[in-house]
Amino acid sequence: MKTTFISTQAIADSTRLSMIRMQSDLAKASKELSSGRLADVGLGLGSRTGHAVQLRQELTQITTIIDTNGLVKSRLSTSQAAMASLLGTAEDFMATLVTVRDGTSAGDVIKPQAMLNLKGLIGTLNANMNGQFLFSGINTDVRPLADYEDDPPSAAKTSIDGAFIGAFGVAQDDPAASAITGADMKAFLDGAFETLFDDANWAADWSDASSRNIRSRISTNELIETSANANEPAFRKLAMAYSMIGDLGLENLDRGAAREVVDKAIGLVAEALQGLTSAKARLGVAQNRVANADERLAIQRDILMQQITGLENVDLYETSTRVNTLMTQVELSYNLTARIRQLSLLKFM
Image (tube, rainbow, N blue to C red; front, side, top):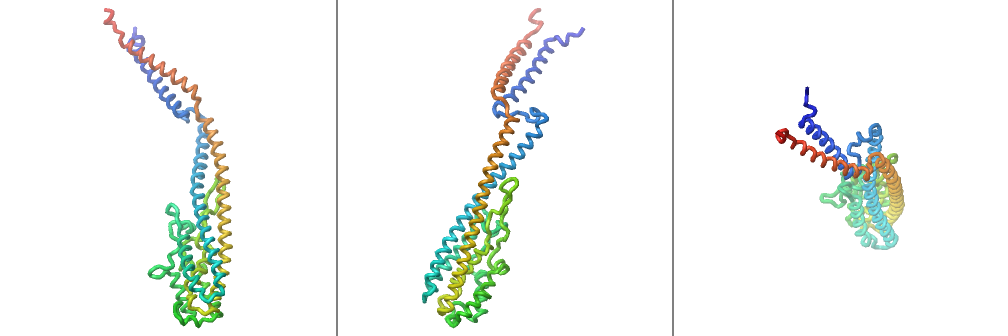
């Protein structure tokens, strides 16, 4: 006859195993009470686990897009501010051009302003945010424009100097430039000089920016352009106007040639103002689309969170009751185990 299953050791081992299970259940229940979520989602949901995983994947995607949209909005806002500054500067320059058009000393009056504006244009288009250049298109790690008045001279200035000498046989600062007629200057401005700002020469002498703008995914099904680039016609026309006023020897030209330069600059600035306004409007539309996308994404995020909560969250009241019950059972089990281990036949002999 076996007495193994009614021995003190067997009873103690059975109680100990039961206590281990209760401790495991207590740890699980305590975790659920502190997090408000199932300790083991897969075990708790069973066949519905796949649905919960899919919901969390969708939530992660939407949260990522919302975070990215924050960066997009910052880039758009900074770009808008930069373009507003360029627009204001160009409007002031236009007013000055109109004022000095019929003056005898236009070069002395407006040349310093033109060179300052050209420097400001290049500095603005070289603006960066978080290490990325705003007006480089998709080449965000490349500074779009080189300084015009570099030492040694920039490629842009070298090209303008070369074109002027090639057309007239004298440098811009040569007093002999006063012999240039209005007709000759007009032909130069509409021909050789304008060619310096076409696509090929702009890319070769002025800009390292890409003509492809950044495209950003602002929602699960929307991909839009969210930048401008230094190769856009409005920026080129401003550079052309500022450089012709500032670096074609306006102060040395006779009245007819100087007027041709000023008139050409007035036309270019007028076109640039229209282009800048259109570019700002385009970025403004992008800002509105991002804001609207964020509102829709926030609603989708809230709906997904509610669905996930309904699947994975636990009833805190029920869980708290279970924790208290398990703690009581564990304490009783400890006491019972201790008493059983104190049982010995020696005490009754």
